[in-house]
Image (cartoon, rainbow, N blue to C red; front, top):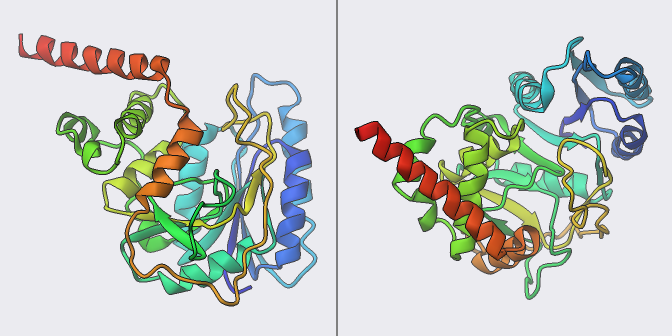
Length: 307
């Protein structure tokens, strides 16, 4: 490997140990470790954080180790956003793994080859490792391009991360102009994305990845999605875990990286996005009612502003 790996950790030594073993097998030349601190109101957090950090001290291959640790808890949103800011001040490109994202060994060369291929292509914002369909029906190439930006094992460049907008300041205007309608082929897709970005903008969810999707979308960016799934999320408890664990513990498969078959055109695969959103988001009447409620509330707020 020639590409640095950024490893995002917190207080889960069990999953961290498994992901670290995969990183050790890949032997990156540079390992950048971002760690959040213990929560003051959670007894036992300090011990768990210390045990987690002890695991990543076991680097036994030729490697430059850089650490960005905090003694206080910043939370998911601020810690990962500030940590990745630090990563891309240090390096031009990186493969990024959270402490519960267990990769197949071929994930590393897959990212490395495509980081090089699309290094200067502003249309491509990230290389993803997760394929929630497990295998893309009818896809003959090694990967496709998508407007789904999964951060369960991914890679990107400094030139893409510079567009990251943590506060999403332009969202009210973009929402009012219905900009998302032009980006997705099905109404339930842009409705879901609208509700998700609303949650991030209104700070109803303490996360950083909604802002990354927003930044990619409104910079006309695309994500690479491998033909087969390369990442299994093994964290059944944690920041990105909801009441529905159906997308966790997905099986992984090997992808041939010596002779990657590249798409002829750099454009979104709408067939993949449609299928993926249907699997991931499970469009329901309840989801539509939720979107409709927030749309009505937003319109009512605008009416009150004019009075």
